[in-house]
Length: 295
Ligand code: AMP
Image (cartoon, rainbow, N blue to C red):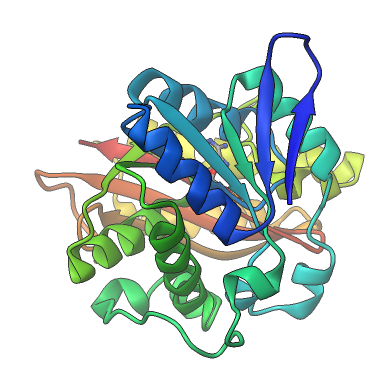
């Protein structure tokens, strides 16, 4: 079904729910020279972080497609999936205002017509077993499955993703390399609230007290960034973990200082890309964040 979502008299957002209609539209657009195609996959509950990806796509692409699909196969925790925020009307309004050309909001049966068990797999090596992979078994297998399917449907030239999900970007680059897909991954910086908290759809589920506590995650990362050259990485990780866990609302799953190309732990400063990553529960809400310490 094609819906024309109209708010302003002159501006339209094309909204598709089926693969066949989306593909026909993209073929026609491509024939009209609306290229390159930029693609922003999301799970909805959009915020300024998502819109920054749309803006980046509009700057670099001739046509911008945004998908909104809460992918069941990447949730290792069923209640997290059940409670994932959904606000499709508000999302479409935001996409319209951001100047996105096409929204794709498929049902699960459109993405997985043969059921959720089939799909692409990639040997992720170490990045498939550490940090997020270790704490969310099956998560990246679900990410690989849905991103491959979405890339096959949209066939974009440019794929825009957020550094906020640092390990996910590495996984998707592996997927692109493994299948030799003709798409360029563009990683965009993390958008933050004024106090430093990384924007996330899950933030809207925080209570006021949890929201006040959540800012401590980014503060821990900023501390590590500011002291990375002078303090021992393992000592900083231990101290920041203790400090965060002193807040009864926070339970740290991991803080890691790693090689930004392999995710292997970095125990002493060395040349090359280095990144600090954190995952913690604030109340019942699991949040992640990261910061580049060195390019
Ligand atoms: P999600 O809807 O959470 O699956 O995110 C969709 C895309 O938006 C992913 O590429 C995320 O990395 C990206 N994203 C999420 N939060 C942010 C943020 N705060 N800044 C930049 N990109 C983000």
